[in-house]
Image (cartoon, rainbow over all chains, first blue to last red; front, side, top):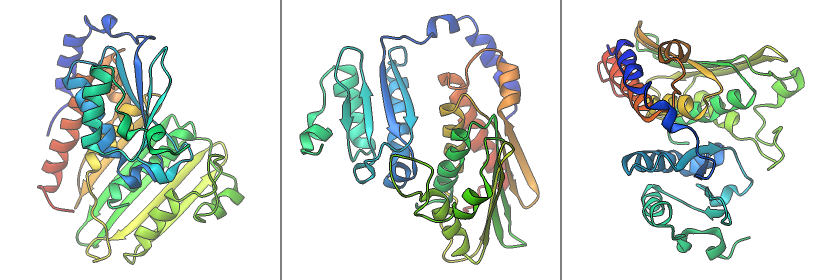
Length: 125
Length: 184
């Protein structure tokens, strides 16, 4: 059985670096819809892909991945909203893990909205 | 929903939205009794008797973004389709208790699925709630209590990448040792 003792070691390692990880108000927020509709449509792999890649690519300091409930557009789930200070909110619809990886690379890293997956592009309002 | 664990993710979400400070999730596999029992208990705001009586009605919800509430009805249907049972009790100001019993060997039972990821997701995306998770397989069990984790971690948040990874490893390794890697 894995024990809690290992957690003590993580604490020792982390306690000196924590002050640098304070939330950055100017950061990007990636919000994944995780209500019944989102989960049933496959939101969990999308959420986990975003979380994994943001961590792997070292974007954690400026990108925060979180989840929300139903925003009332259930037929377009999984829905991902990207909030970036000074820019209009971008809503990606019918996402999957592969599309999430593309959004991380092109939008979160390079700053270009992946138009083809947005709600605006699909003509839906 | 394709997995029981996704139902757990969804229904436990209601507990966090109800302002629960502690959400207890018990998954108990009993091969002799041929049951898989899931209990989700919280100390959130609870429901009135009228709300409880309507909560399994798909066309009832307290939400305002849409007119249907499918989470609990899906969970109930999934359990009852296996010859199992479903119950929900609640009291305003005290909390809610949801229990679903599945027929373990029923051909209509959906797989348990990735319960470890479900629990990890709940923990790291709901820092305002504590979670007590216990997984039991034929009497053997392990527990993860975020109150214990917080005590050890001091002020280090549970969603710190190193901690989140530790939680995932704790859940997967201990589950596999508890059930011997059984496919459920």
